[in-house]
Image 1 (cartoon, rainbow, N blue to C red):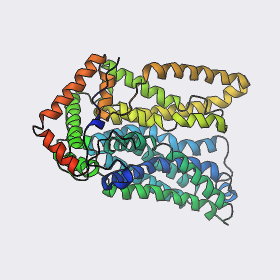
Image 2 (spheres, rainbow, N blue to C red; image 1 turned 90 degrees about the vertical axis):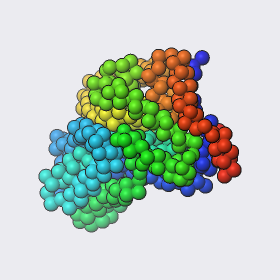
Image 3 (cartoon, rainbow, N blue to C red; image 1 turned 45 degrees about the vertical axis):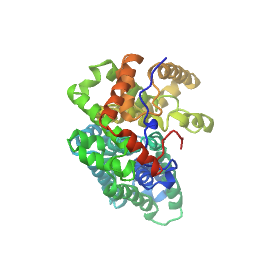
Image 4 (cartoon, rainbow, N blue to C red; image 1 turned 135 degrees about the horizontal axis):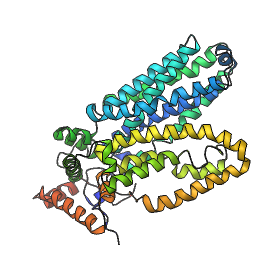
Length: 440
């Protein structure tokens, strides 16, 4: 029988069991939802080209593009992220997640302005390239920051909310392009183009108050600042909150261990069984989200009703949470880059294969889905009810006994730092502390 790491839910915490009644949790959720607008604006940009093709004024301005030219217009949004995702990792590691997000969002905003004010097709394409470049930076930083600032009780829900915002973005772009049918002249397509700047603008505004990742701060030796952030957003500012001290202990121990093992390069994905498993999992997720049949049956509601249960919210959030701090943005960079290439390959091959094999081509995806069923069963561990650091223990311990030892060592480290733990617990109980055994 497997032994799970000591759960944070057993530790007292100065927050209300109902998040909507708690000031710090409401602020925490506001920041995380604001960061979800990163994928919202990328969804908006991704869906915009399809809608613009229905507008006569856009077709006249661009001389009715089709074939290779239209494919180039589409590719300019995606292909830059194959490279810029790795630049995003470098910025995240050296300057922080907020800086990477700020640069990425600014580039998307600038690209949206270039799109809307374009005087020729070349200028419009350059705007798409700028948007795609900024998107590559933001897609690496946003999921990592959400995972690292979210309260552990809310983290699974907030992380899973990230990618569904993509569809809200595509829906809005479709609605605005539809509205453009009733606007005369070039503003029929310039209007939905200029709306691109709103959501990156909101993300930039969110970053003004959003905290930096406590994990990143600890990695840079700014432990007191990390503790201050955790107290403010995870415990309503209580300096000696038990859960905050537990989190900080886990973060320090995890990052100290990674530093000792020098676990901070791409080659580290190959140097241990746990990291090799992580690499296989993240590669399977970034490829699988485009290779489980959605590329050939995109408009079947029955199919997408089941696809969206897992393949929409989980690939990005699961990838971010299974990676240790030193490899998190590196893994997300690989996820973004390889996922983009897999999607491009899929879009190129599907029309050719369907023409050659007709209905028989569906058998290929049936086989792929059967493979994923078995692969997920044996390779994807459960991460529910654990902090990000605890999830790492699931990958890095060889058996349940080692996992138990990890849990006990973390527990001993926590209680060793507090000789008056029982007094603190009474103090917490007197101010209405929740135990987190309740579910939200």
